[in-house]
Image 1 (tube, rainbow over the protein chains, first blue to last red):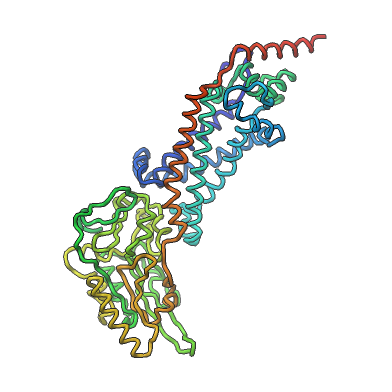
Image 2 (image 1 turned 60 degrees about the vertical axis):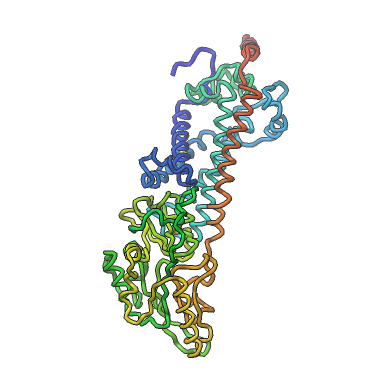
Length: 219
Length: 305
């Protein structure tokens, strides 16, 4: 990918491919899962070739998503560690939401909202996978007592709804904060974008003469 | 499985609509299984296999009279044998014909996510419509009696149909026809309750003071009922649930969680849209680029010797 001069690498090619595999799986899981969750959404199963195919393919996509999200965890966990600064940033969330970021504590590579999305999914994805295994009728349908399956299916559906709500937040934030989508498609952001939204990250890159995403780990 | 008309459906799985409700004078049917008259001959099992064209693969002897050992996609009814000793140490051999209870409030139907895969007819029979079944196994989780079995071959769920195809044309279920002792009776639910009442009186007169009818109110009654000599403890009959009811977990999952979830999703999307029209996008301004440039230049200047 050609990157205009003076811009910064926000996400490496590997991270972007990893992200979009996860995103594709998530959307397919959302559609197939919702079709089995609410009768009014059963029509979505037609997208997968009918109810039987939806039931059959959903757990496999989930398995791919688990592996894919583990890749994202490996790549992003360190920069998503929670710090005291995040609480200060959260306290100024009203100004962030009002698009008035002057005076809001400076943010490193990820802000508290992004970290919330990251860790929510880091919790929800394994929960969904494990409860999903329990109710994967074809392979594990008779491996657990029915009462365990009832608990699993309830947790699975509620965790899925939580994940969908987190996902909506994530997608909207990407649309809202201009330049974020390009950061995950073409991988770069302008320095002005970094100044505005992730000033601490920019300062660190400039100080070390790095073009991103992390000093010492370019591209 | 059945030839009953769709206008006879009073409950349809995964449907938010009112099922056809014009026909409403159909008699409720019931099968009455009198455990006190059962001799464990398995004629009902054989008749079920024959009428429904079911052949379970031949298994191995497991040291039990139960044969086969469990219900399966091709075993819809099964004699279950229990040896039970009362308080005085008297041995009783309890035999119960297991199979779908055809609940008035069916947990399988409540749990099913596939529209029309499970239906209940006006006569009370709960039936699985295979062409609509997606093989998810939710019916297994919904059932308080552990009855449905999902086939690993065709991924459809199976259970006793109460011979809905026979009943639809005025015949009794195959197991009823085959029973040599009259332990299995079939008719209108009220007739069966009356008949059970007589049987209970008779059993009580013979010393079974806890004899009674098993028609559990937790699932609003069933269309397969038992006469039990020990109705005070149904679980001694190979684990027949004492107080069956649809699990509250299933109730939550299929009840309040569904609308709350859709509302939550809709609310999140709406909140995003509202934010967009109130605050709008957060765009990088020329000033930001300038400041960033200043920062870079300052850093470059510092590095100069």
